[in-house]
Amino acid sequence: MSAGIAGNLRHLPAIGLEELNAAAALQTRVDRKYVVPALRAKQLLAMFEADLRILEMDGNRTFDYDSVYFDTPQLDSYMLAARGRRRRFKIRTRTYVDSAVSFLEVKTEGSREATVKDRIPYNLTDRSRITAEGLAYVSDTLAATIGEVPSGPLEPVLETRYRRTTLFLPGSDSRATLDEAVTWQRPGRSSWLLDGAVVLETKSGSTAGPLDRHLWAGGIRPSRISKFATGMAALRPELPANRWHSTLRRSMRLTPAAAA
Image 1 (cartoon, rainbow, N blue to C red):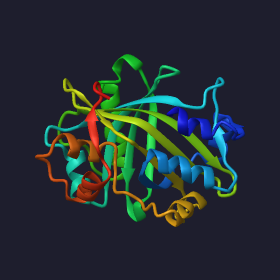
Image 2 (cartoon, one colour; image 1 turned 90 degrees about the vertical axis):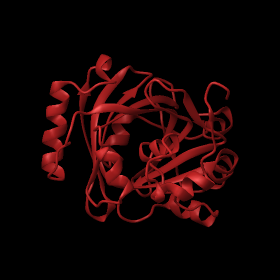
Image 3 (cartoon, rainbow, N blue to C red; image 1 turned 120 degrees about the vertical axis):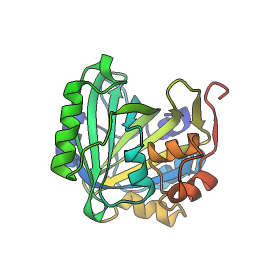
Image 4 (tube, one colour; image 1 turned 90 degrees about the horizontal axis):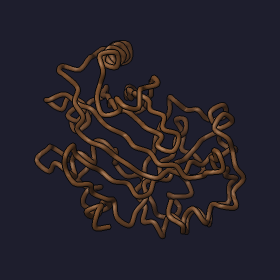
């Protein structure tokens, strides 16, 4: 992350990926997301008194992520989210840039706002397309989780990039992520940067965790934001976007990434 926020977290004890996943894998979880001004995020983390540990791998504590999102020509995935449908899905490849490892992921949301993520290893060279094997995996996973399959071919519609720091809260066995330098890009178009803010996401069970309560006490409330859906709405203003109108208007100041 930026030097300011990462510097404030340098004193935290480390946790390895294997230990983190054993303690708080949370593949089925409730996510609470916040768009926080970068300076305010730095202040709130400095004031947080509960125990925190920070993910460290090979001596690194911040990591570059790249995600490519896929949808049908009718934008079924986006439209399900825009209309607030109870059972919806997202399909993406996620690449951990530092380790050059990719996964094909299917995220579904069912009852009680619980998010379930299924994924398989994916060839790095295929990160921007859905192979025949990948499509079979997507169809089987969606049929098993929400009983529906895509109604058309899956094509890339959006790419996101960001730098992530992951925190573990041992008192609640929950985790949080801090994403900075978040950019969105449509295929063949320019990139846009979320300027002056970070996306903070808590991942816990059904009840709010201590970091959520700390943020609420500091006047920070959850934002309705999805890197996929809100990014699509921001870059394609012709799409229905009532669910994210407040976030787009109040919290998301986008600037051309090249200029920034």
